Amino acid sequence: MRHFYIGLAALVLTAALCLLGSESLHGRAEQLCDNVCLAKSEWEAGRTQAAKEVICRTESDWQAQARLFSALWNHEAVLQISLAFRELANSKGQDFPALCDRLMLELTRRAELERPYWHNIL
Image (cartoon, rainbow, N blue to C red):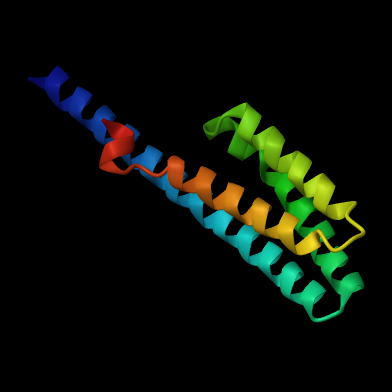
């Protein structure tokens, strides 16, 4: 009976750590999306330099957290998001808002795929 309780405790601890990690990543992805949205609104308001600075800060935040994301997300998704940040930082034209939208969509979609919904678990 003691082995049963040890196994149950290990299962509960593992599930709790998975949920905590998932929620942590989801919160970080939302924060990154909020920063990209701020950059987009700065760009649309005509403050292109401020938008570029926000994107550079957000990209450095992403690079600092990319190892954590790559531990739980697919490596290709992390690479695509890194490339999208790089493309956004190097953008010079009117495609900046579209690139922001694409990056926010990718971050949101990837974070939602990793949340423990019943259809993701089964």
